[in-house]
Amino acid sequence: MKIVTISKKDWSKTIENLKRDYRLFGPVRENGFHNFKELDETELPDLDYSNTRLSPKSIIHPQSEVMFEYSLDKGNKDHHVLKETDKDYSPRTIIGIRPCDAAAFLIVRRNFDTAECKDPYWVNAYEATTFVGLACNNPSGTCFCTTAGSGPFDEKGLDLLLVDAGDHFIAKIISSKGEDLIERAGWEPGPDADASADRIKIMKQEAEAEIRSFVATDKLKDKTTRDLFDAPFWEDVAFSCINCGTCTYVCPTCWCFDIQDEIFGRSGIRMRNWDSCMYPLFTLHGSGHNPRSTRMQRVRQRFMHKLKYYVDKYGDGIQCVGCGRCVRLCPVNIDIRKVCGMMNSHE
Image (cartoon, rainbow, N blue to C red; front, side, top):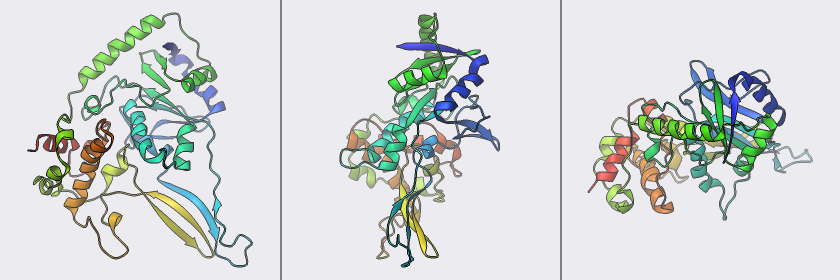
C-alpha cells in the first residue's frame, strides 16, 4: 500500500498539473447545489460537500448521446450511410467522487460490459477514466452505504482514495491508474506513511459509526419472487407515487435508456437518451399493449429489480449502494429503506 500526503496549499498546483494530461471532472457548487462537471482552465473542484444532487454517472453514460448521423437526401453521396459521430475518449479523471458512486459503476458495468455484449460507448468512456475518490468523513443522515455493500471509505471501483485530514489530503493509491496519476500530479510519498495509514483507519471507524441509517437485506435471497411479487403492500407503497422518475434519474445504479431517431429536414441522428421504468411509455408495445400500465406495477418493478431480481441473478447483494439520493429527493417521501424492510420481513 502506497500513501502520499498533499498539502492544501499545493492543491491548485496539483489541479493545474492534472489538467495538462486529463479532462478533469469534479464537484462544483452551482445554484445552491453541488454537481459534477468538466472543469475549465481556471476552475478547482469544490471538495467541501456531502454529496452531489445528481450522481456522476452521466460522465460515463451521458443523459443524451448521439450514436450516429445519416442523410436522407438521395442526391447526397452519403445517402443512407450511417456515420458514427466523433467521441472524445482521451484520458479523463473524476476527482472527488464518493465511494458509493464509484462502487455504482461496478454494478452498472454488468449491463454494459459482458462477455456476450460490450457497449462501445460505455466501455470506452469507463476505461478512459481514472477514479479519484473522496472519503466521507461526515456521512449524511440518509446514507446507508454500510448495509448496501459500500462504505464511507470503500475502495471498490477507485484508483485513488483521498482523505481530508484538515490542512492536507492523505492519498491512498489503489491501482496502476492511481499510481500514474500521482506521478503526473507531482505528488511524492511522505515520510510518515505508517502514521497516515493509522489515521485513515481511525477516521474510517469514526465515519462508519456515524451512519445510523440501514437497510435489512439478510432474508431477501430466501424469499420467492412470486411471494414478493404478489405481496399486498405494493398498493400502499405506490399510493403516493406520481411517476416523476426523480428516483431513477438521481440513482447512480439506474441505467435504462431509449433510442430515438431525430429527423431534421433531409438529415437525421440516432440518439440514446436516459429513460425510466417509472414512466408509462417505458413498456408500451407497438401493439398498444402495456404490461406495466398501472402505477403500482411500475413501482413494484423498480424495487423488485433493485432488491430481488438483481440479488437472485448475481447473488452478491442489492442493486443499490446506499447513497440516499432517492430518499432525499423523492417529492412524496417514498423511502427505499422502508420498502426493503417490508420485502425482507414479508412472510
